[in-house]
Amino acid sequence: MNAPAKRPDDEIRILATNRKAFHEFEIIEKHEVGIALRGTEVKAFRENGFQFRDSYVEFRNGELFLSGASVAPYSHGNRMNHTEERQRKLLMKKKDILKVGAKVTERGLTLIPLKAYFKGGRVKFEIGLARGRKSHDKREAIKKRDIEKDLRREMGTRRR
Image (tube, rainbow, N blue to C red; front, side, top):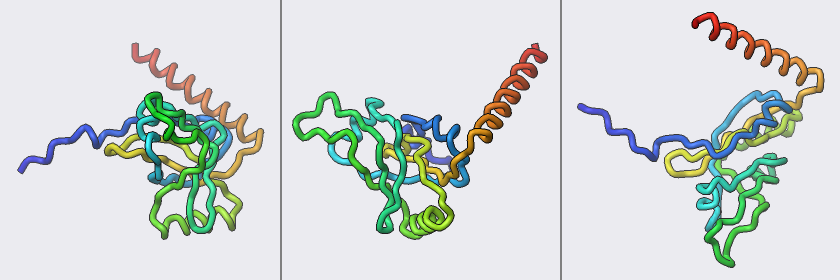
């Protein structure tokens, strides 16, 4: 028996990554969530009209909401085009939402969006449960990253 052919819909196409989040926060857990979109928003995502800027995820009344993210208006939209900076509901299993919400409220952690991508024709987000870094932790992370980069560069030149 042959395995079913891989459809192009199964591919992941990354729309945006929140690089600032990896610098500002220490990521403890990652979760994949869907997002409830309206009208022209999906088409705007396809045009790469999305920015994280100062976005964050709120836990309210047992639900997750994406706040502060900007979805540019669709270029061929009409007067019914979506608003740029509205709160969008994130979709996740109720049990998982309550687990994450409990960690956010009791431990003082925060939820931040890390990545936006298309998966199977749908817009998905990767959100992270994170703890803020102090300035000395940021300097240490930069040092560590620079050392690793130098090591990789040195190993690459030795192979030649």
